[in-house]
Image: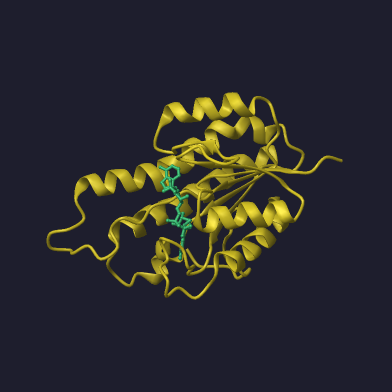
Length: 218
Ligand SMILES: NC(=O)c1ccc[n+]([C@@H]2O[C@H](COP(=O)([O-])OP(=O)(O)OC[C@H]3O[C@@H](n4cnc5c(N)ncnc54)[C@H](OP(=O)(O)O)[C@@H]3O)[C@@H](O)[C@H]2O)c1
């Protein structure tokens, strides 16, 4: 049997790069994508509808056993309620963190349908959980809440086709986004996420889980 094939978006650095490395170390074939084509990565800007067509053409009919929607931005860190959070920032963040996930899934559905045990992982955040509404970061929080909701509704629609959808909080991770003071290394987050996606199946589809396997409230 040939090695399973994963596609990971936003794999130029941070959690996406670490997860691509971890999956390869576990024997997966990984197609890593990033905004800038480089190394062995394919080009994919998830805010650019044209770039999905190009990715689909390169992948052709190749089965995708796992799609990890990881690309994301958090531009409103530290914005002020009084004069921050400009409308363009809402638009860019939703285009990346929500529409980007939807368009990635839709573009690769034929490849997922061609796989034996197809899975989709949506990398959201505990900041999108309404049970952790600590205030601030309105744009990022709303976008990650929408990503959880999108993942759950995709899980409902795709269950009949045997495509499982997992939604994950990767931990607070030392990346460009998480910052140097974060508690978890990208490698440790990636190990946990790889365990989660390898275990994901239709029975657990639609769950929101942490990198270390705890179910997270919505
Ligand atoms: N770090 C944390 O503590 C933490 C916690 C909870 C959730 N998350 C989530 O985990 C995911 C990865 O975060 P990270 O910490 O690894 O962030 P990061 O270090 O800032 O990396 C983000 C990745 O997303 C890519 N990206 C951004 N916009 C894109 C676009 N339009 N098209 C394609 N790729 C794009 C970036 O590519 P470029 O190199 O081209 O910019 C980069 O590869 C995100 O969804 C984030 O929200 C992170």
